[in-house]
Length: 247
Image (tube, rainbow, N blue to C red; front, side):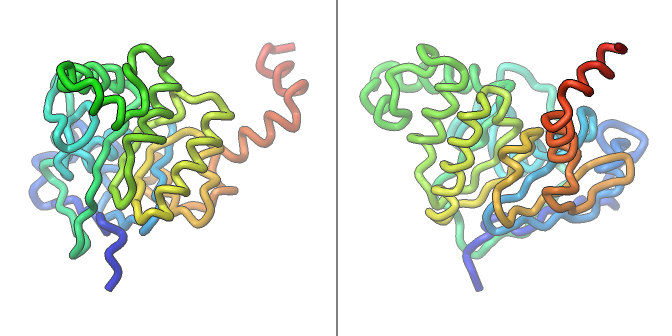
């Protein structure tokens, strides 16, 4: 039996759900969810805005013991409490072996995580600098702080959950992040990533789950809207801009 994937599967305890007409259980992808199996290396969760992908990834992270705003498992804080209750209705199937590193990276709340971590290490700035590779995440751009975290804080043999990491990254940085993800996979790590990025989605061999009005289905990279729309736009950008501008 292999150690990976650390998190093998999550299941929705459907018989315990109070109502499939209430949020977030009324979302088609959640309403039709029974179980979701994860790739040993990289699993992507994709879908249009409102499809439930961030809700699902957040619930998986909370089920695994992370704070709603992200960070390591030790970063137990919150500046708001607007999570759904989905995580209370999940059960997980895990490996016999635990990862040695954990991190939940959320684009929308990473500023709060950076503030929390700098406050924790206020009297030990040397340790902070060794962990993150910079003296202050707030003295970096959003993208630079993301890359500092990916490059320095994530140590391998880890379970890493990302929610739209591309929000802070240029295309070049997305490619750099893709390379770093592969390095960490080769260091025995597992990733679960919600994304809109066709660059990140290109990771070879990854499992891709698409959330839409029909539920959740596994798709190939070339079948994703992210790939098809981006490819069509770039190959026909002059025509596409005329259409979009109503000319």
